[in-house]
Length: 431
Image (cartoon, rainbow, N blue to C red; front, side, top):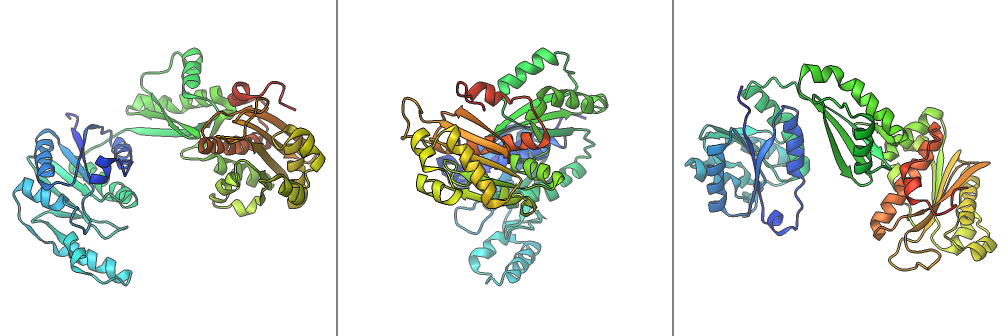
């Protein structure tokens, strides 16, 4: 079978102006990948019926499949239905199935179905409805110039559900696709893409052509993706993924979409242990990340945000003498922060952090980006100083991730130093 040509049309003034960043096309591409399909062209057009109509005609003449994202709402700048009707030379009409779904959606939420809402049921005559279980705007489907056109709302949560549950199955059915594409993912932290590539080149130089290896950086993690689309590739993928994971060692966080916080919660649950945090420069971010994970209540005792020296001394018993002699950003202070948090919370494990997030506040001895962390359990607390010269928000995100990773490694018994320790450690900082 000849490979299907797929194009994507995005609509909206907000996309053109940069007020909204497009993330929908990435999701659509990822979902189509499960069918072995790739988007060959992506076009963004402002809210202009004539421009949209012209683009739809042009794309429908080239592509087998066209997905239009956006422009299905109730306002005057939602123009997809009109533009597609013009392109197909079809009249607009009330679609009874769309109206019924819209009415049910409003009744369920005790909304009044007004005239503006009803616009979402005015569609090109003869089109088929694509159910939207999350929102008020139905998608719809029709053919033009032999091209199958599917429309989706611009709201990401609605679009994702519609693509996964309605459009991908419809494409698979309508085009009789028997895809063998298989994708495996795992998450990595603390080692850069270039370093990973170098390691693969040096130690896995015979990487098979049947397995496509991909990288996706998403602060603070890197997603490794292995894709196969042949029976031979499927048969060897597990072996080579295992080789890659062995090569990356303790930097592998987990499978699929696992986060650092999820990995830490799972490690604590397996040991029936708990953790507490004492945070200064990260402002409670480690605690926030952990509490986003279901089941964290089983393993999370307390988070202390001790920003000022006075609160460090009052809440978690950091010695005023230690603060004066060594400064808040020091091995000695984070050690006492950790000990105080352990005592106050009664937790099994602890992470403490104090640093200079910037852009001001640094000195020659302790420049902006200097941070100290302590982690471990009673009687076995380690400290490390790192140089993390990043903008304030990214500094906080990265340092919080390091804190979660250090205690994760400690709990599961990883003793090999992470690459970020080798790259960022202050001279003679580890204790």
